[in-house]
Structure formats: C-alpha cells, structure tokens
Image (cartoon, rainbow, N blue to C red; front, side, top):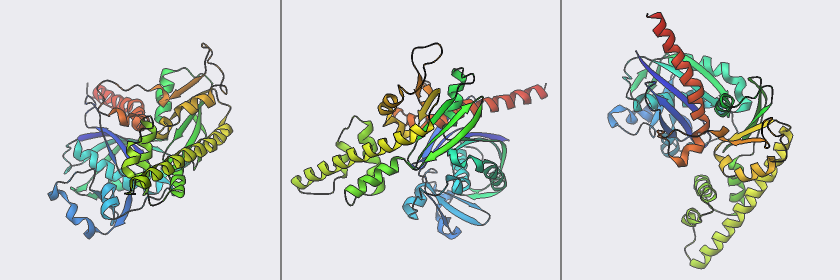
Length: 378
C-alpha cells in the first residue's frame, strides 16, 4: 500500500501544502486559493479526470452526498466569496480533502487504490479546541469521498494539529534550551494575528485579534475607490516587500489621463502609508497585553512587512538571554531553508510555519513508524 506524508496550513490568503510519498524524497509543495463553495454534483462533472486539468486549480470534493468546489474553481468559476470572519475549521474538512487529492495526484499515487496518510495541520490559536472534532470528522470523510479522479479511500495513520506558529515553536525549541522560560509565538496573517505561550512544552494563553493584512486592505479601499480586494492585496504586499518599488501600484491604476494617474498614485501612496501606520499602532497596543515574555519568535507573511517595527518595539521589553547580552527575538523562529528546498525564495516566509511542521512533526513521526515496522519484521 502506498503512503502520503502531508503538512497543511489553512491560510486565508492561500492554502499551503508540503507533501511527499517517500521519506527520502525532497518534499514538494503547492498553493491553492482558499475559497470553497458548495455546488451540485452536476456543476462539477465537466472537471473530472478526462480533462487532465491542473489539479491545484480545478479541485472539488464530494462527501456525504454534498459537493464543494475549492481553490480557483470555486473562485473563478463559481464566484465564491471568502468569509474572513468565520472560523477556518468551518471548511477545514473540504479544504483538507481537496489538498490531499491534489497532493496524491501530483505525487503520482495510484489513486484508484487505498493509501495511508500521515497528516499534520495548523489552525488559528483560538480554534485549537476544534482539533478533536476535526480529526473525528476527517477520519469519517477519508473512508470514502469523491474527487475529480474518482472515489478515494484514505487510511489516516497519523494526525496532529497545532496552533498557527506551532511549527515555528517546534523548530525553535529543538535548537534552543528554554528550560522553564516563557516563549511567546506571534503570528501575523492575512485574516488576523495571534499569540500563544509555550512553557514546559505546553501551549498556554492562546489569543487572537482581528488585526491582519485584510485590515490594511480595507482601510486603503475606504480611502480610495474601485480597487478590488485581490488587486490591492497583491499589489500592496509586493510594494511593501520590494523596498517600496512603485511598479505594482502603477500597474493597478485605473485612470487614463497622465495627470489623473499621478493624482491617483499620490492618493494611493498616502492611503497605504496611513493604513500601515494605523495597523502597526493598533497591533503594538494589542501586543503590549501579551507581555511579559522571556523569548519571542514571530512569523506569517505579514511579519515580513513589519519585522523592523517588531524588533524596535520589542528590543527593550524582553530580558537578555542567560548567556548573552541580548534578548531572543527571532523572525520565523530562526529557520533557514536547506539548499535543496524547492520552495522559491519569495514564498519561503509564507511557508516557514508549515515547513517547520513538516520537519519537526511529520518527518520524526514517520521515521519512528518505519523504524518500528522494521523492528517487527526482523
């Protein structure tokens, strides 16, 4: 029987997945749009396997006689709207089934047969209480579900669920001796931001706030006009990460007259500046409530945009490490990707959490499993 090893991050800007069918293989990755929408079985029949379409773009799943289009199929064809206010766990089943189907196809598993799955995933800190329900529902759904390549039966050999930032925490703890010190894990995402504490290998004080990159996007929209969510999100994120290169902003301008375009760009730049300052001021106020802490790691795609502000804010608020003359403040937990990683540099910050989850959860568990199998077969 074949195996699939997978780690999933249910991001609000994109579903991020790392997978492999052999432990010795370099792990693969893919991203999917986060949208999901319920449809009828007749609506998706033309997207079945005979069309040989990109599996990451045209994914759907059917479980308990209910069908869901996911990713770009949901977004582009069925015009699904992402609801940033509902829990991610609401649609975690459909997204997981779609992600596993895509991973199985890309890994070239013989999906006409059963296969065994090792799965670890990330949920928002405030939703970690849904973990047991999610596992039970996944185990039931995996028994028999419909996909673009027919029905699949998956034997879930291992399941774990961590709060967002849990992968970074696992990585950091393996490289640093915390003793009984409190480690604060701060995640800055598209939908919201969260913080939790790790002490003596226990997750504590799991908290979240609605402040995310979507807050910045919303404020920019209120100060400008006619820009779509996706357009602003992509252009502004690129602008802020590429040393304020105005090229992506110029490409999204809507006016035709040169003078009007200059005015539009000026308005847009002022809106971005105000929105980012408002966001940081609000975030810093929320962050103050999470202190005191002994050490801090922070991550998420938005963390890249505010790493200088974060370091400046925290530099005088944490104690120095016992053996150093500086505090411990690490972006992405200090993760450095291996040279053979397939994840492009531009995506590594967004994949850092799930990459650490792969390295420090899925891989050790899978190796231990095969070691036990080997011992039993001796």
